[in-house]
Structure formats: C-alpha cells, structure tokens
Image (cartoon, rainbow, N blue to C red; front, side):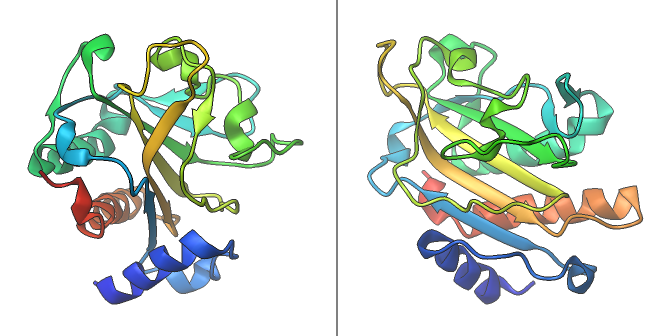
Amino acid sequence: MKQLLFCALALLSLSACREDPDLGELSTDFLVFTTHDTSANFQGFSTYYMPDSVMVIGDSKDPTYWTGTQASEILDAYQTQMTTCGYTRTTDKASADLGLQISYVQSVAYFTNYYSPYWWNGYPGYWDPSYWGPWGGWYYPYAVVYSYSIGSLLTEMVNLNSSTSGTKKLTVVWNSFLSGLLSNSDTFNTTLTVRAIDQSFTQSPYLNH
C-alpha cells in the first residue's frame, strides 16, 4: 500500500482543487483524501451515531439508500475503525458527541446546479443539518475538494456538541474522499472500499484517543 503517496495527496487536497487521475490507471489501487478541523479536540469525544444506511447520490429525483447486506460491509468497516480509535457507537442520536454520515457518488447526471461548499447539498434526501438536530447550516473550518468522480465514497464526521442553537452551524470536524472504487467486479469494489476506509483512518492519527 502506497501510504506515502496517499499522505502526499491528502496534503495536496487541502491547498488546491485538482482533477482525479485517469480511473483506468486505478484498477488495482485507490486514492484517499482526508481533511479535518485542526482546532477540534477529538480526545474530548467519546460516542458517535451512524445511520444504518449509505446515501446513494445518483440521477434519481428520489432519495436512494443502501441498507442491509448491501451497506453492511461498509458500515462495519467504519464501526471497526471508530472502535479502534476509542469511540463507542450509540443508537441515541440526541446524546451522541459525533455524527458519521456516508454517501456514495453513483452518478452525477442528476445535478444541474452547484452548491457551496458541496454541490450535492441540494440532492433530495441528502443528510442535511436538520437530520442531526436544530442546526442552521454547515460549517467546514478547512479547505475542501470540489471535484468528485463517479464511484467516490464520501464521509463527513460532524460535531453534535457544537451548540443547541438553531442559528449555529453544524461543524464538520473530519472528511474523507475515497476515489477510484469502480471496477467490473462487485466483490472487488467492496474489497477496495474497505481498504480505502481503513487507509482513511490510518492517515488520520489525530482521531485516536
């Protein structure tokens, strides 16, 4: 695994937007970008809530989600890594310190407008601040990558203790972008996805307690 290459690419994503490499050159590997709020005290968080589904961003006008066995390997990989980092998953969203939301970019044909900071925020059914509570919007205290390709897995970790005020924006404290997950084999895709998830935590040591 080319960890040094991944780290270099992650740093690059903080400073500039860039086009993804030719996916034809990523048939045996993947790219992992991660960013985080450098002012966040991750050691101060102990619990997290994660939905039991993966949001699918596609060309449908109705929200689509992966659930059950279709999403289990992806969600299990995140739960394993979060447990290793010292966090406890809770089923009570209202009492959780962190929220973890996961989306898969299946197609971008549906979109005609771009939103700030992420162009999929207008997608129907997308996790919005109201899903997590009385929030007034998103806040990203770091640079984000604006260009995403089909076959990308996107993850956002939000601080649910930022405020209880309806005018306070929900702070995203960690973000990962996994690209190059397309192949002709569903099994191979799953294997690459889990490897990429593991790598996103490996190159984010600040998440550890």
